[in-house]
Structure formats: structure tokens, C-alpha cells
Amino acid sequence: MTEHEASDAPDVDLAELLALVREIAVQAAEFAAEARRAGVEIAATKSTPTDVVTATDRETEALIRARILEARPDDGILGEEDSMLIGTSGLTWVVDPIDGTVNFLYGLPGWAVSVAVVAGPPEPSSWRALAGVVVNPSTGEVFEATAGGGARLGERSLQVNEAVPLGRALIGTGFGYSAERRREQAEVLLEVLPQVRDIRRAGSAAVDLCALAAGRLDGFYEQGLNPWDHAAGALIAREAGALVGGPRGGSESDELVVAAGPGLYEELSGAIAAAR
Image 1 (cartoon, rainbow, N blue to C red):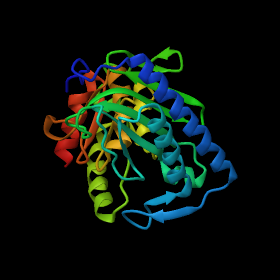
Image 2 (image 1 turned 180 degrees about the horizontal axis):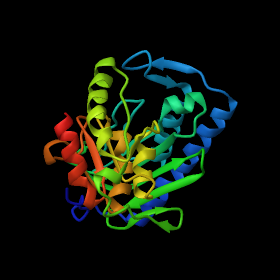
Image 3 (image 1 turned 180 degrees about the vertical axis):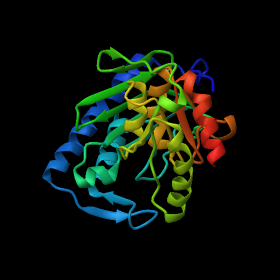
Image 4 (image 1 turned 90 degrees about the horizontal axis):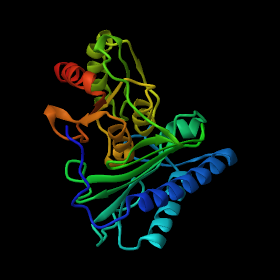
């Protein structure tokens, strides 16, 4: 996969845009963390009875949307909890107010606020990610990247692990909520697990992709992700040197997202393709 280019994006100052994304994501993370300390209740379920939404998911996205519309009223917004807002500027904000809602519900640390801005159609195979921020309130970590500007954790530049063979690779993955999806994922896992060092399942694709960027994982794959699950994390991983793609050598999609350093990507992709 080649780098998503920003050269033909609408005229925008990426540093200024990133500062706004960071400000909004950090504010949303603080809001969600305070709500978590006050107690959490399930507000609804989505695809299955185990696919939950909390009131804080909805309230956090509402806060993010309000801040975006206040600062950039012509931009579009694609979020997990509300309907798509079509903009006129050519830019769309891709928002996951709480990635890892089950972790959030149970008080586990693997959840995050993920906010990205993309140019072009709001679909991963067509957009160009310009700026992205993932905030993990449990650790206080703020991961960020701009197209062509590198990835950072705070002030530290990030770089993926390189030259890791598949047999010594620590791989992150995740599982869906439907029984059929989990059955398919388990079948793939049974084939992949014996070929790698080990598997980790944190419960948030955004957290996993940032862990890859920071060298805490060597690779990541997951089936069934939505655009908001990986928009910011994929940019951060790419800007840290990872290759990010999908099935049959194409772009990342709901069918599959694969990410790893250049020396591992083809091996991992091949193992997943063979298992699928």
C-alpha cells in the first residue's frame, strides 16, 4: 500500500488542523473519563445484545460534533452514534467517541477517543487522511499524526518495529459481536496463532493501531471494522512507518484491516489470506 497523499486536498494548514483535532479529542476524552468515574449504564444495543452503547458514547459524540460545527461549520462529520453530516468544504471528520465501549463499560483501560479529518469521499478506499488523534484517557496518552508529518506520542516521534519475522511477531487483533463473525475470526485465529509469537486482544482497534505505531505490537489485523474504528489509528500507524491495507492487496475496509512494518506486512497478510 502506498501513502495516502494530501497534495490535492482542500487548502488547509495541517498544523492548525491537527491542533484543533487534538483540542477537541482531549476535551472529549476528559468528558468521557469524568462520566466513567460517575458511573456508566447501557443506553441501547446495536448489532447484537452484546454490542452496547452507553449514554456517554452519545453525549461524547454530541460534544465533538458541536465543537466541530462551531470551529468548521462547512466540514462533514461521519460518526458512530449519529447520522452522517454532509459538508461542503471537501473535508470530513471521522469520529469514534469511545472506541472500546465494552472496556469502558467494565472499567478496563483499553478505550479511547478517536478523531480524524479526511479529504475526499468518506470511505477508506477513497479518502486521504490528513490529521488524526487518538486519546487514551486511562493512560493519559495522546497519539497524533498528520499526512506527511510523522506520528507522535506527546513530543516523542513514533516508529514501528522493523525486520520482525512472522514467527517472532506480537500481533494485535479483535473480534466482532455477531456469532457468525466470531466463528470466522476464530477460524482465522486458529491458523495464524501457531505462526506468530503471540496474540493480544486489547478491545480497541484505535488503541491497537497506536500500539503498533509505538512499537508495542509488531502487527495488527481485524475483520469487520467500521471507518471510524481505524481512521485516526491507521494514519498514525502509517506515519510511524507501517503499511496498512486490506484484502487482496487493496485498501483497508470492513472486510479486513491489516497493518505492520514493511518487513512483516507481506508475511502477515499472506498468513491471514491463507487462513481465510
